Figure 1 (cartoon, rainbow, N blue to C red):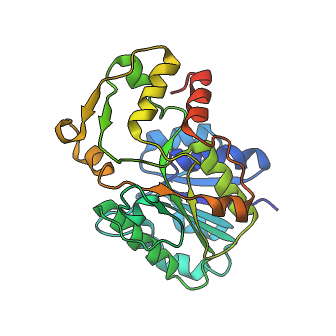
Figure 2 (cartoon, one colour; figure 1 turned 90 degrees about the vertical axis):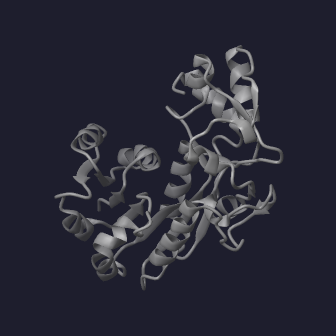
Length: 286
């Protein structure tokens, strides 16, 4: 029997999962916001639906055995639940698995300290608070086989630092004590796929590599791999940054990933940024 995944907000991470599932015979229905993006999804073997829009999402939900939610919340709440909470609740017992892609931002700032899935959720940014509220809203649906994935900073093909380093526009923003965890899109895909194969409703998983590191170290290593000068250091206090970029520096923490290994049997493809960047450079897709 063909398994059908309904993927709300079928973007970068969800497309990584699709690359694993489609060759296994899965049917994937993915929502997107525009006709242009819908055409690209169709080329990848995904059945596109426009959402918000005129796409028959209710009909797709009836056919789905699994649901993945990547669409981000706003001040108005979770867009999927705002539109389809009642329909999702009616199908909750029938669904085999539901995944929600959240963020490690729900943990807030720990001044470089370690967090795990049992750490209290005390987000310090507006986006982190929205994610916390969205997690709670999904978890409140009775009988929904929900799995929450808290993603660290995502990188991968098309999302690496090499283009900026080559163009001379990369900067090493220096903020004392600042450290981030990261995750490669291929590891996100294998972790979510492993959860689908081993459902554990109610579980939350941190999705990150083994090596939290200061952001300036990543930029410096990318330059070294390219054989180019290391970009200049710029103090965080005087750096010109967008409000969005600056908000990422509001929190510093190291994220533990033991649960994905212990419960899902994961062996990371890219256990640190050095392995990930080397692979991107070899494919020249960063």
